[in-house]
Length: 427
Image 1: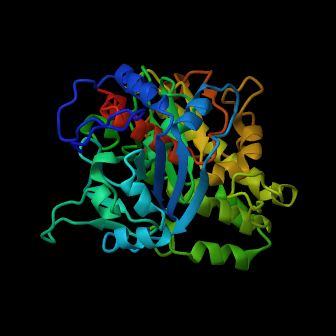
Image 2 (image 1 turned 180 degrees about the horizontal axis):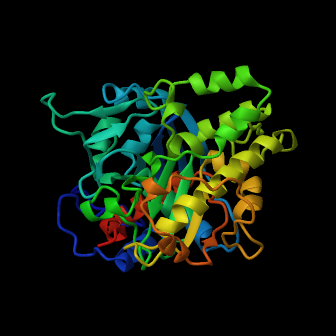
């Protein structure tokens, strides 16, 4: 900082100073100015349950992506790539430098902005993490060990003045709709290792899950949606399977530091990657196979996976009908949902079956036949009158583009370069 910006490069807003531009319109305006900067590059990272993913793209390619019509994909300089699992908070920066050697030059290049999507208790105003899921490891907490809670840029060895961090659910939400800002009242399910969740308000501003008021808008049955109890339909698969050994092997695997996790099933377990794996085991189907294009291409073995994919999709339909719409799509909710979107590799692998299970020809939620409906009504604490109040037309957006969290992190970083990242968040 302190140096004059190079010709043709929009200047970075000084960090640590109060920026008056904090509305959603200011966010969009700042983003538009940065998109017009021809030599701006964006390096993004997605720190998730299976490790660290990264990608590189330019501001002009992102601008073309956001302005085009239809279900387009971003023209990457470097397509999304998995770097593997980081060691945790100790040595993350050294590990990242070793697996991504070109990062050193990018850090020295003032034209490069950095966006990071990560889980955890994140303060968006400061970039500080109070606890987090460290790149495929277990939740880390720093309380009581004598250290200050870390800044994500410092953990990763990135330039703090050019690095902008947001929660992974919000990153998928920002990248899923192919728009500069999310549509109003949109909920995005990012389906990978677990189920991430993001939601926008009536104007399209993103509801901050780490804020006191925003956290409640992400609750299902009184707890964050990703960790909410959910029985699902999988017991029926297990009862009828002829592949007992394969099923037992999946159910014995630890998940989120829990041995025998299926004894206390919850949303991320049942509807995330492990739920798909259980369906594959129960129906004797193989995992998805893709080409050599970084996972962005179509599933090559769709037909032999049909039984497991359809069962998994029906379980999602059951969840949406019995749990999600009665609680999130009613007028009693502060941030009511009118539309939903799906993102993440697991959703991409099963999207055809999911569309058949709960998306009508008019791209609205539809539940023709979701199987058993016996969720514990005593735990839901909702009357039949409340359930009946759910709106009949919930729009289902097209499947999110590949790498939506990386795209969302890039959008956020560009707006941050223009001094208006905080304008994204609902007030």
